[in-house]
Image 1 (tube, rainbow, N blue to C red):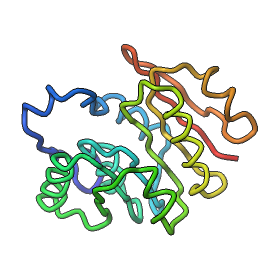
Image 2: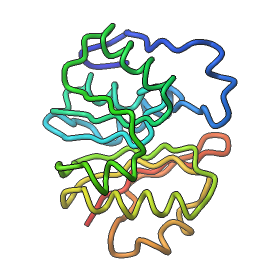
Image 3: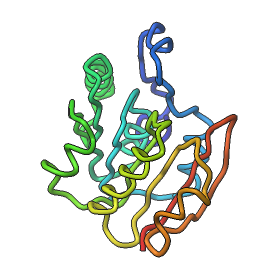
Length: 181
């Protein structure tokens, strides 16, 4: 990690890497994204599919005001809390909830940045995550998205709502930084 918790490591058991759809954001992609976006001090961030918490904890380390990390898997949730306690991260909350349930029924905050690095290989679920995210974002805020789907396919559904500031890919994963109108 960078920022306040520079050189700290997030710990997860080796056997987690064998879990289907366990695909943490690689370090070099995370680094590139945070270089793209720059200063996030004062931001309210939402990590919809926290997994290891790499993106949410990095946002907290870089000075965001608050980062909410959502993780419905109880094993991941347990280790997220263990890492939060170990690093003594004060500006984050970890909730064991489904992300769409949280957005629709619990959320009371408008965010500056949402991370969507879900394991979605089903296009309709990815589009729904983006659509619901738009309801809890401030104007001129950002969405970070990792997906196997290309930009043109995604933009067919979100013309005049978001635009792509930056884009790159690694292996089969495309990653995007969108700005919300």
